[in-house]
Length: 282
Image (spheres, rainbow, N blue to C red):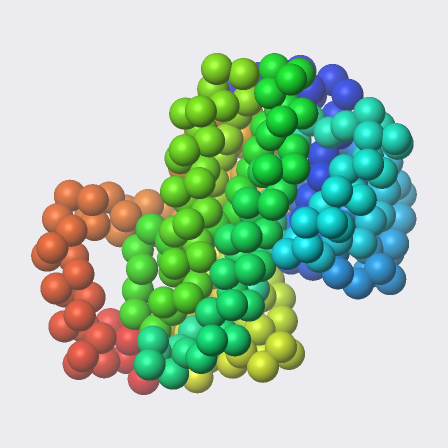
């Protein structure tokens, strides 16, 4: 295992959704290691605040507004970072939103918002920066998905589909980009202590209104992992060069069980859900 700094001595990273939660924690941890961190997000005041703290912690912070759904904004960020740093070494596609509801209650807006941010935003980032990395024969992409994309529990159809798409994209890029010496990791955490549920509620998506959402909220409130521990785990996984990165041991075991006995797994999930037992208990 080699340190990221050994592989990327210029130490340049772009993080989407870097003003709260995991993205912010990752920005600060890389700042402490002397990285140049492009902090991006929708709100310019939060972007500037986070970029300032990056610099205070020993890195070089550069704040740029970025709505990941908008391709023209990606191009503007690309030009700004080319001018400032000559490009980046690591792209972290972290920006995302959460939702939890039954499939029949999801309207077009619920699907469009989740897919455009969680999946299209990641695609836009990869399409913007993979050509540069291929030309340079160097780079790393960290795509933040979710264990939801691996397990697909009920009452999270739009979220599951968006995150499964990120996982599928990451698997494809891992193979395609390997010939250019580009690494890919897809981070698949379960709920951890962060502002994810609060942000969803603020945006009108009360994930705790569904049984699965309540289970997720319980993970967020009571789990031992925080934004900081997940960020540290993600850095270690990139240094190992692992494709799949699942911070919580219990969910690594559940994923293994699903892969070994997929039909039995989903029959059991369906039975638990129908009877409101286990993680779906009210």
